[in-house]
Image (tube, rainbow, N blue to C red; front, top):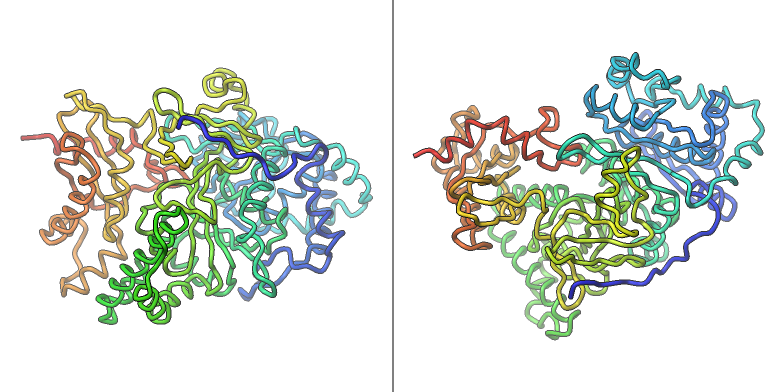
Length: 608
């Protein structure tokens, strides 16, 4: 099958913009909890739909008072927090456009995005961000205003706009059409300079409304149990923005958490208690790894591993039943599953707050076995696929027939087409309008409304899409063998001790790999084996550790032929980081940068 289409569930609005949902929610159900924010004591405080509307309109008036006009672009450089959502909807209320910047962006990256987008005002989170913008402000003559969240600009702007009548904001809002630009989101720049994706109000509406309707069981919690989600993905990334828009339009209680690190995130999951989450595989890997380490510390790793096996078998049996290839779990398996639900699975759910029953995962591939485990443990993860250019998800697993290890079927209103070379082409209401001020790049990927993604995939007989690689990342060995590195890297990374893996081999005689380690997992591994702490340079030479990593490499090699397999590897003393320019803000590998930074280590793999 080369093409698969799913009809839309949502009717495309003919008028209005994204801000309208804030005002409609407040009008129809003013007392409903719309968001929650932390107070100075770190306690969650609810914000009603009416309160949020009033804050949005007050801030919108302040922005008008400070000279922000219809069609202006305003940069936002901040971690994920309540004020970001507040500013987004205030800007959309007056027909302005937000331009997100990753808070870790360098001064030159900040300059390029603010200059390219012709931003006239900018909101930053703290003094460090202000200094970053300040260092390039002399080259940005169009930038007239700079606000800093830590200095409480919300109060300042609210006071500045107090004299403006609410009707002025409403007149601006009524002039916004679905075809108007809502935001320009810059790609994370794995290769070359970031490109600004022009996303309209209609793009977000098509994406969010179809997802909310298709995943009604996720967005509509059970009676008496308020639907809620904690947003911890970067709002500078399209996935995070889609979550924000879907929560507001779907009337789901929304909270914000600024840190993706497990040590900060897990306590907030437990205090906020979401009913569903949208995350990247890294989060689920961390939850699983923490649970297994805890079991090993308590001397119960044997029962834990048995519980994992039961969960995987149970979920597989349900998967077979959903596709009509088997009758489902047998009596013995159901009894084992029930036992482990009390002993193990409930604790895994408790780590995520205790109420999570569904999750959506994107950004990178999730190992099939991990998805099966969580499903067996009572948390169904719907893996999906999308890009900035498709306003997040273009495909996702359907709730009633999840095929683990795939990214599912097209979301409603989307067509997935495979070109002759296996490249994935997308068509639908969520496909972006093009790259800002870059007609050449736009013409290279948009063809009569079709978006050529650059990703490679396969579609099975049921219309389920599997991502097999990226055209630009295919390695060709000196022997002429083409190798897709991503499946190998993901399988190696599935080992609990591995943080990252990059496969190399372009124009080389064979495939090799560089591997980095997870510090928390390694510390636990050393403790459980009675080994002393070691400096990184000694740790990477430990023969027992090398044996563990070799097991991960051997497991990855079972996916491919001998000619495509990883022949040798090297363990690195330090992880690839965004700060060193080796990862994108969405944690993707910058392959060329890594190979340049570790040129000596790569050369050593091919000596002798």
